[in-house]
Amino acid sequence: MRGGAVSLGGRSIWRDASFTIEPATITAVLGPNGSGKTTLLNLILGLVELGEGTLEVFGEPPHRGSRRLGYMTQTRVADTTSALTGRDYVGLGFDGPHFGWGRDRSKREVVRQALALTGTAAYADQPLYSLSGGQRQRMALAHATVFKPELLLLDEPLAALDLAAQAEIVDLINLIRDTTGAAIVVVAHDLNPLAPIVDQVLWIARRKVRSGSIDEVVSEEVLSELYGHPIEIVLTPRGRRVIVGLEEEFAHPHPHGHDHSHEAGHEHFVELYEEETK
View 1 (tube, helix red, strand yellow):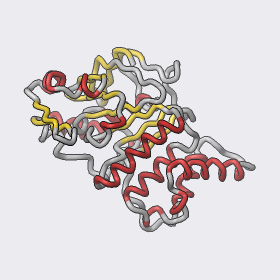
View 2: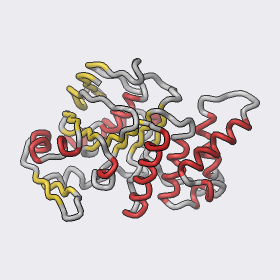
View 3: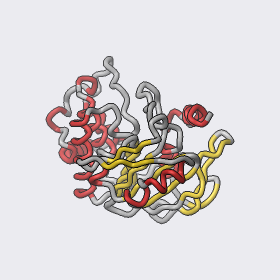
View 4: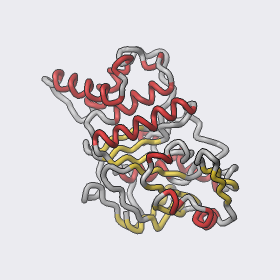
């Protein structure tokens, strides 16, 4: 992206964004609710257009339906009335671009490989609603990686998980990067769980975007400039960064009962953005 700017509902979301995502790297996208993190993923997916600047994905303008991209939406609570198993769900990732007859054998093999990669084969035949939050997230990663995408977009994969489950998902994200060589973009609410594996940070706040390494972006100077008031960063003995001055910005994580997937359109995003900027 070079000089990118985007508006939704006639309102500027962010502007002057420039960054590059390289193969086999992990990029964390951070910022308060409504700042435009999911909109960035939608741009890459070809679901939203830039108002200004340029964006190239694999050397061409982004477009819908590319098998070179994998996308994991914010996972919601599974429907307890559905008998859909994990294996069924991962199979839906294969069915999307494939219509017609005679593909059962190739589908079974592709699904088997995705389950093996994510360590989910042992419970793949259980109903989704019976799985723990961490197991469902693993299954969602299997769904998103069914075609071994070169670019994997993950929208808050650590949300609503306890610390142990978060650590397992972070290890799995790193394993997928190392095994497949994919570039991975992770929208997150907290950098600390991801910090050991992150190569680049994109921080979006107050209609501005800053990119670079953790040390370059998650600094008192850069965050104070982004937010327009003094920010203090305290480094704990275990290496966690405690950001002082943004407590209110991050006090209300996304409610997981809402649909934040791209099928829901962007009206809800604009509503969130307006609430956060009143």
